[in-house]
View (cartoon, rainbow, N blue to C red):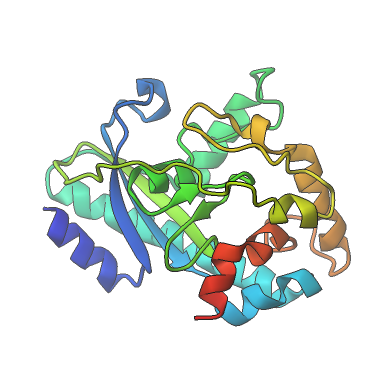
Amino acid sequence: MTDKLFNYLDSLGVDVKGVGDLRSFDDSLRASLPFGISFGIAIDKDIVRRIPDGPFMDYVDAYTNITDRLDDISHLVTNFIIESGYIAIAQDRTYVNEQISASKNDTDNLYGKAYMPHKTVAASAGLGWITKSALLINDRYGSAVRYSSVLTDAPLDAYVGRYDCRCNDCNICSENCPTGAIYSRVWTSETSREELFDYELCQKSFRDRGKLINVHTGGGTCGICIAVCPHTKKYLNS
């Protein structure tokens, strides 16, 4: 079934795909489903290359359009799994935003966050590893990929392996962050988002840059950490 799923994902135009075994995470974080299907779409090189000189609407539009496509793909994949006789839950924006709103009631999650983040599923699926700035580095595209995911109990072949942080002594992301939001701490599987960066300062960078082009909601106004990452630059120069 994994081959059929991957062929279907290829037909939908994804650039990366994989399956992660999520059973090491608490049931409540993964809706008691054992596997996560991860898929992503790369951001155009020319757009990523220009991010440090932004903000500009091309990136905002690309960010929004890719997110819309990923939502659509998550629904199609969910239907594909359900029609095959298994349970599937699309982690689309509605699903994630409901979790973010619910988690704001927890004083440890003042700004809210997803229970099973797309990048966590992607790392578990062997699509990359998580950096000091909580980005996910893919071997081909660096951090210039947006991800979505589907939770399922379908009998899929999941990735088996490690996804340790490989940032080592590199701190380029934190050195270039406009608001100094990144703490330069090495990620491990036990690391929380709050230990990696200051979410409010990160959002301040989005807001400050967004004001320059009259964009006040959504993403695509910063992304400097993506563009300056040496692993992303390999993609830009390929």
